Length: 149
Image (tube, rainbow, N blue to C red; front, side, top):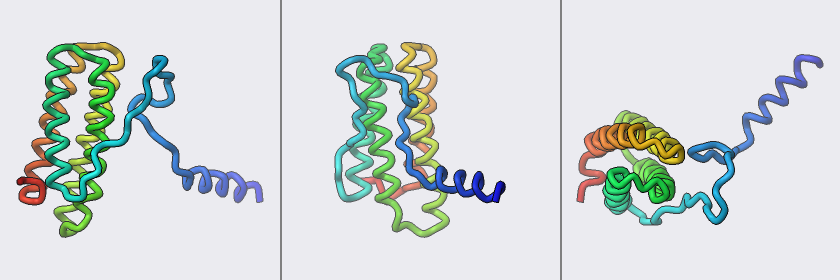
């Protein structure tokens, strides 16, 4: 019984869905909120077009060291990439697994970019933005005609 109770507790805690944000539970400045809703298009091509538009805005904000804009842009981009993952669920299994791995990496890189922008660290933000571009090129290469107009 001593072993079963802690194991059952861990299983139940693991089953709970917990929200995750790019920078944990740290408080936001007054008046700012997490914007996790991106556009709600139905197909992967439209989602990809929206995501590439956000990437261009992220690039512009990074060059201008506009960390406030990067905060909301990276959240919207991560949400769009998550939608892209859902929209590509119908692909053949091997290709889908690779694509979803690349999308997950792009989401992770977007979160790292978000964190560096929250720290107002211009050099680190520029580095993370370059990594994000590389991750998105991989997503584009793996998705192929699924996302190309």
